[in-house]
Image 1 (cartoon, rainbow, N blue to C red):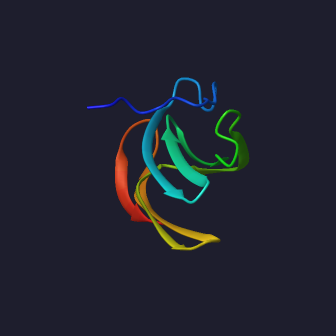
Image 2: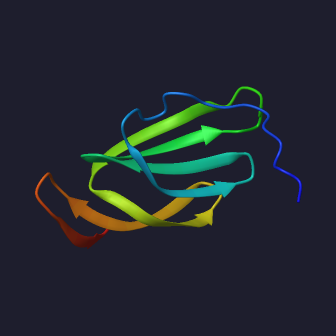
Amino acid sequence: MRRPRHDGQREHLAPGEDIRSARFYGDVGFVVTFKKTDPLYTPDFSSPESPKVRGELKIPGFSTYMHMIDEGHVMSIGYDADDQAASSATR
């Protein structure tokens, strides 16, 4: 089995956070990380050697599933969370 080719990387996207969900739409990705807030990053992979972050949205909790509605809309389902516990919610 061949290993995937490594063209480029984006370092320091969310230091100290875990990736909870990811979805790709053409050259654009949507990546959710979590520590105390739920940043949704939109990386652009149109230049694989030098990916860039198009945007970022920070909301409390974290998403565990993302679904592409169309080219400009993504639906996210996840949990509202704080330092003590997490409770189920839909965003």
